[in-house]
Image (cartoon, rainbow, N blue to C red; front, side, top):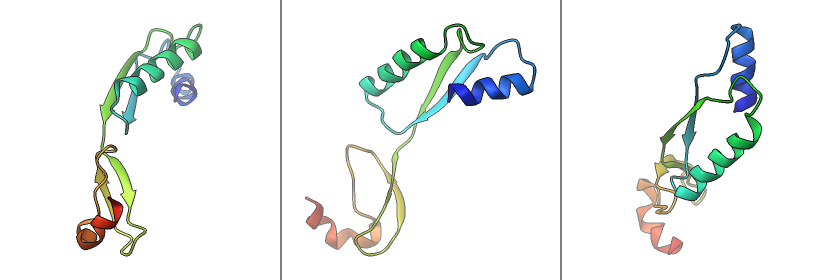
Amino acid sequence: MVGQALAEARTRSAARVMALHLVMYDDSPQALEDVRQALAVVTPGTLAQAATLVTTFAPSRFICWDCCGLRYEAPADNRVAATRCAPTAAAWA
């Protein structure tokens, strides 16, 4: 993510990276803290050193490999069966 932001900044002759936008599929506080710690390690001395982290949380994406191949979204900690597969959802429990 930082590498891409720095490459984009260089192509635009930017003086600095103002913000790093990240879509996260894990909304746990630990995941966010891990990202913040990683940025604290990799950004010093770069154009992204003082960049603000802007996060958007999104539901996890799944594919039903059980029977229908449907792609759907659900919270990571609350995986549900695809709507077409509701009768087989009991097998996941």
